[in-house]
Image (cartoon, rainbow, N blue to C red; front, top):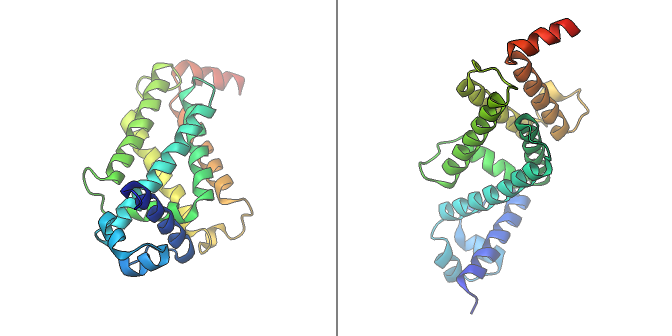
Length: 216
């Protein structure tokens, strides 16, 4: 008899396959058991309800996304926290493009009610802390002025990412993007890059702004 851990992994991969084929997770565990080729009793031992399966897939998606974000951070060989944020954003966008069904599942869940102490709550809180930590580092290094409102800048990043998510979700039906032939990851990355450039420029220490005016 298979261990519970092996059955869990098989079910998660089967659910990911089902999600990719149908655009949603199964609403009935009996149907899912047949799709996965695993007995209903075994499925019920792991997931007691479709909601449990949904939570399992959210955990799976967040785990894979976090791996991509870590890889993005590692790929940035600079100590510049702004450059690190750009590298993390690149990893995020590449993962979203390569995992469209899982990404849509996560975005849909993030746009709904988020239960305290849930996987999503921990994920979004960790991202807020990451943004804030990198912006504080930029302030400490003199990239951002001491008077920069770090809390506001952190919330602006959050709103930017949510907006970028919606490009992936609605690109095919949004007429705003109909005439733009750039890929969604490229477009989202350019928007993120322009935002970061403007954020740094608008909040640069006074000496940097004065130098920029002279060189202009």
